[in-house]
Length: 185
Image 1 (tube, rainbow, N blue to C red):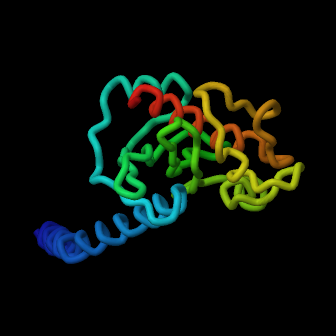
Image 2 (image 1 turned 135 degrees about the vertical axis):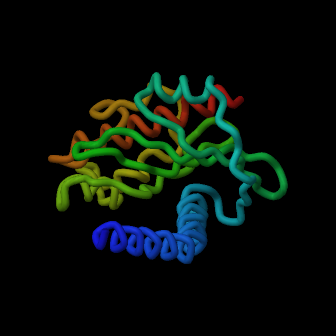
């Protein structure tokens, strides 16, 4: 009986804490999403509310090894100017979640990593946008690239030495975003 009462009190307290913090957590998540979106498009761009993701978009992204979980329209100077997508793809130690901007010409405008579990000191160099062997920040090299499936590590994308799998994860996400943009038109 005592154990049941303690369990009920603890459950009630957890429920109360959840009710008190849920809105604040949602606000923080929304602000972090807005910051990540702003980092991958031209300054001064505006965003639509979250758009519905059609099955065609889901399938196109999956065919490239990624998953589109959020989709927003981008407007620049009042005109439609592409999309920002939250995309997830497999890295070396788990899922890499990134925001990817794609302009109206179906070219990547930027990539910002939202969350990851990549190896510290190796994969974190990729998600932290450190320079690759060519001296170019690894995420920046995707800017201006287009053509779903055309981004390939070792051919069109230069990996950071020792972090090839992490670079491949970002590349899968980029190809997935491009495939989704092609379906969106």
